[in-house]
Length: 168
Image (cartoon, rainbow, N blue to C red; front, side, top):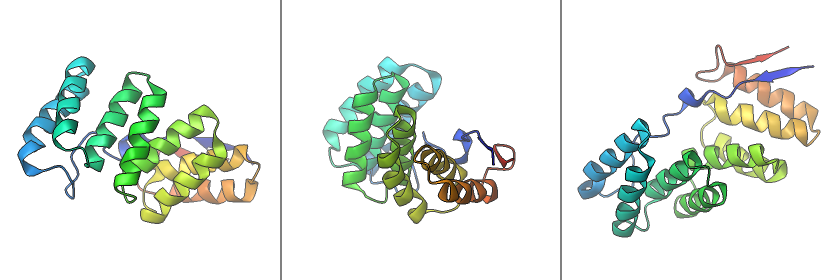
């Protein structure tokens, strides 16, 4: 069995404020500006704005997530992990943080830890292809071939997977 998986970053909108966000309404306009800067590639401005927002909303899992996403864009992996872990501690149901943390762990080769994180993500929402794809890759490296195949099959059936994952 050969698994060909291409993670689909468009399956989850990582840089949008979710409808159930814990960001205070008074800060959302500022967060949107920071996200606009992030989308446009102005990472310095995005960082400046997000750090200011984090001071005003230190217990926001969504702000911690955005800081983690930004750190990844800046190739600051340790900082990204710290922010993403913080986001999942503040809100264990922060699926975007779980998925992104799982992706980082897979890319770093920390497959056993990635499995734990990504299993939490698919338990929260089984519909996205990306966590299944990443989980399949992690299981493959852990030599758990049956689980890898199962996750690959789920990835193929998941939202946004039509042209991104296939089993050969």
